[in-house]
Image (spheres, rainbow, N blue to C red):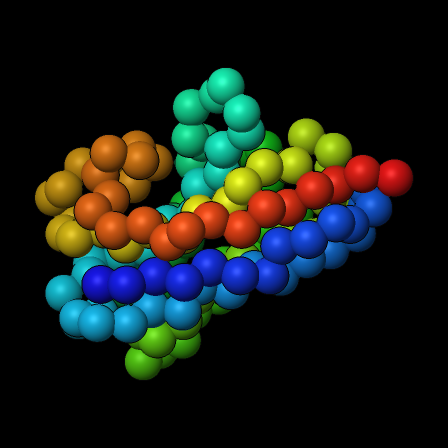
Amino acid sequence: VQLQASGGGLVQPGGSLRLSCVVSGGTTNSAGMGWFRQTPGKEREFVAAFYWNSKSTFYADSVRGRFTVSRDNARNAVWLQMNGLKPEDTAVYYCAAKATVYSGAYYRPASYANWGQGTLVTVSS
């Protein structure tokens, strides 16, 4: 599975961005997808995740109500709509593919086998 994330940029506090993650190569073998973010010197942090066979989406407490994940039913793309952005949302955002339901907790980066290259989101006035 290959992942290509894009859509990052500079936005003012309170603004919005929409990140995209294009999925290719063996998507049917992916059980679910996740979004994570990372800032220098810190561990990669869970943002949101879902399983392809479930309608539910999981969100970190810090983004719930502001961020929304949407997906392509053909499993070719995933989007992260980010509204009400705050300076603390500044990070490199990654999309990732989870191989199976049993490959670990959805909120743990180690549970994901494939990662995109990341896209930088900067929230600043």
